[in-house]
Picture 1: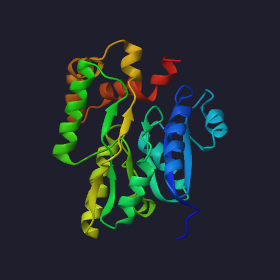
Picture 2: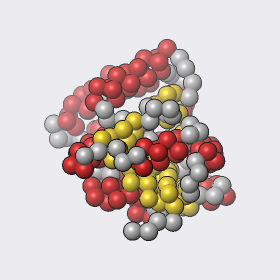
Picture 3: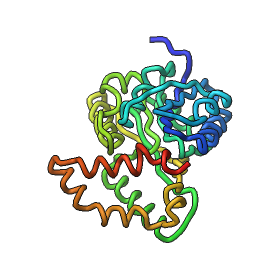
Length: 250
């Protein structure tokens, strides 16, 4: 299989005109350090704002998608990608400068089937620090690093792309990548010198850095019902906090 680029970066975006340029800028900064070729694909999901125009003005390719499922949005970008290696990052987040170079080096070492990245919030506070340490502990205990997910396009094709789930699709997909890698004698890695710069926009919008702790406590019942197969209330929460969030915070 021939590729036009060494790396394709997939950026799902639903009404992200406030954030798409800074995400693209972080990818471009990483591209300056990386010696290979990179394409940036912004998947405009049900966008009614200037996301597509801003993305194109800043050198990204745009793909349009109407699904209400983040996994399918990511897969729409992967389908159009012409890079040997796929890297995914959400539009309100950013990557650190040598991210692409480190990913390429790890893949080309032949030791890794793919991997993830540590996450660090873009600003600090006590509740965000608690959230950060909980995430770090969870990632370290499970090895299921997400945020930025990277693997060869052939690997995503082999596992069928991101798992078709409306939430936690990244973790489910990482599990498949790990299993596939095990059969190839390769391991799932994590970036050592770079990390995901995790957006605090929802905390900022709410004026509450305890936001996700409160949400978890307040919505424990819908989450337990979803675990038993009744996902109606949990799906409504996903729509409010993720799929329709930007519609209500313009």
